[in-house]
Structures are given as structure tokens and as C-alpha cells.
Image 1 (cartoon, rainbow, N blue to C red):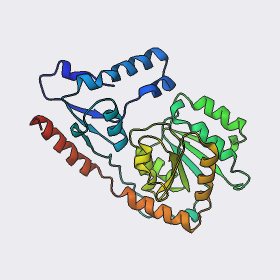
Image 2: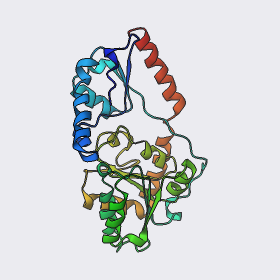
Image 3: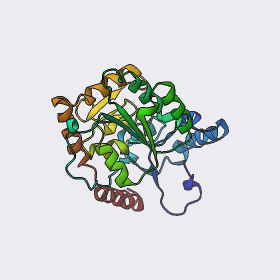
Image 4: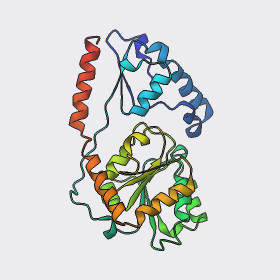
Length: 276
């Protein structure tokens, strides 16, 4: 949410923007709060038109440009990740037939798409299990939905876990699924890739930057349960193509480093200080 600092700050302002909510806010919170966020975002172009921006993905940069921020004033710096302690993940074929999700359990994350897709796969994969890592307001509804779909005994709601626990769960999964309708970048995609776990995600802002479709995972039209099931099933088979994708995912994750992000932040700060 913008703090409107150009109105009162005597110092140069560098605007940090992970992503803007837009109309997505109305799916997440009560309408008075959503309307407030939406209205404040409308003030970004006129109030910040002379400021420099640092954002975390090409999708967020494009969103800012659509709203009227000049592209020359926006730099992109991808997030780094905490490298996992496990440096030699098992091949997919040696892992349980498990599908994971990492993130908040909120309506706009579309986790029910994962559940509905998984329900289509139990006939082909009798040992299929799900682990949902994270917490949020949508958990009670999702727990009931899992039972309704016949997935109650197969689904583990892990809740909030430590980084090491998250990595252990991702390393046991053959595929991680990110069905959200909008992200700033998709940090959990790279965290899964760092364990050689490919990802099936929505072809949505942010996620289309962090997933290299056909190489490190698959992008699927948002909310398309049938295609989600198809792509998840392709990775659950753990054949040669899936193993190649897992290796590519691990290699892709090595590009994202917090030291590099810190250097890019320092450059953005200096450019802002000197009015460049």
C-alpha cells in the first residue's frame, strides 16, 4: 500500500513495489478495506511520477507502466532465496507421489483449484497425497472442500512451518502447485525449484516470470482445473521428461541470490540519491 511519502518527505523517495492489488483486493478483504487500497493505488501515478521505483518482476513493472509510471523510472530486481541445506535432492521417481502447495491460504490464492485437480488424479495415482504448507483465513473452507472431494485422508494441512521443515516437505514432493491469480514474483516457485521440484502454476502476473513454462514447470490458464490436472499428472509420472524438468528447475533457482539483490538495491538507492 502506498504511503504517499512524496507529499511530506524532504528526502529523495525510492518506491519499493512488490505488486499492486487492483481489483484482486476485493476478493481478499471486506469491500471498505479493498476500496481504500484500490483508491490509494489510483494515487500512485500522479504522486510518484517523479520518483524512482524498484520492483521484483517484469509483470509488476508492466503493471506500473499501465498505470502511468514511465518505464525509465522502474528498475527490476528479482528476489533471492535462502539456499536449502539439502544440496542433493532425490530424483522425482524416488519421492512419494506427493503434491505440495506453499503460501497463504487465502481466497485469491485459488487453492481449491489444486484440490479439484487432485480429485481428478486419484484414479491414475492411487498413492497420491497432498501437503498444504501455510496458514490463512481460507483454511476451514479448504479443509471442508478436501473432505467433500474425497481427499480428506490424503491431504495434510501443515500450517506455518520453519524454513527447514518447508524444504523437507518440498524435497519429498514430485510437484509444487501455485494456482494463485496474481503474484508479485513467485518466491515459493524458486524455493521449490531449489529442491529440484518443478512447479505447475497459473499463467498469471508474477508467476509467468518465475516459471519457465515447459522447462522448469508448466503455466496453465488461471482456474483451468482440467489443464492443472493434466500438467500435475505429467510430473507425477516422474518419467525422463519430468526428471529433466526437475534438473532445469534446480539450475534456474541458482540464479537468485540475496547478495545480488542487495547490490541492485544499493544501485537503486544511489541513483535515487543523485537524482538519476
